[in-house]
Image: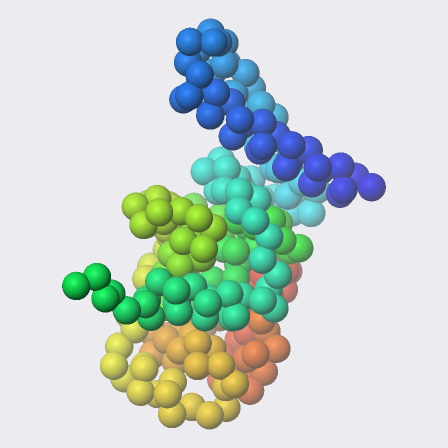
Length: 102
Length: 137
């Protein structure tokens, strides 16, 4: 149960951080920028502390760097067994494409 | 020196099962507690996965550089490519590239989620999951 809640908390805070950034960028006149930034920092801090605590629960001697923690869960899931096919698809799309613009 | 597979980085970025152990191993390298390297091929893999996640070229490059900070990029030479192309023990060419990169660069331990893929060379190179590596430290 706690794992599920931790995952939910992480996804929700990440989505909220993303929303705060969008609001700051696209609707600057609607909100107090200083207040938004304060909220953003506080939410980010909570998220990083939660992630660090999750790691500490299994590896008490390891204090993972903040920059690394910031990357945790920032991209959509891709099961390990699907990685080779996904990579092949990317290479086909990005590298294998033929530039016939001229 | 240990060599790290791309899937450890993907564990962390995608918060997959095992992300905590993968984070811990990567962190040990980033902090300089252990010497860690990765294949030049792995750099390309990390970059292309960032593109797949919707990043433009510039963002994907910057993200890849941030991920790699603290790691040594191991040379991928013509000799390694030739050895990998000719090594039929591996079902995947990329696994052969990883193995021969490790061998040619004097790597002692290869840390990967896909231990099963490297069973054919377990007598020639120590292959460990992130969890097993941390347990052995």
